[in-house]
Length: 146
Image (cartoon, rainbow, N blue to C red):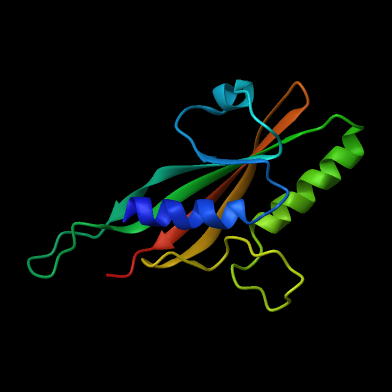
């Protein structure tokens, strides 16, 4: 289940042509910023899950709500204003609908059918800025269908 969801997310992010690097990640943001890679990049990590409360019958051993983090890193080699605009455009693309109604829109992760439930954005936040590299983190949730 975890690998299947991960692969769906990675495949969708790979379809966003602005990303030069898309991969799974385990570690902290500082380490990721220092990693040699092509920018902009997207890195996916499993953040955790909440389990159903215990029941006498019909209890599931699978998480009810799975959380995934997508870290987007951009590198600005121009002025800060244009770099910030480019970053915001890329962040907006990540949360585009997975099946957009307009064919000109690049598919993103919102409502991505993982086979185990739909992926929904929960939060986005600024994580770090260092040496011209800026990192933002999205939290996405999959409500597990069991």
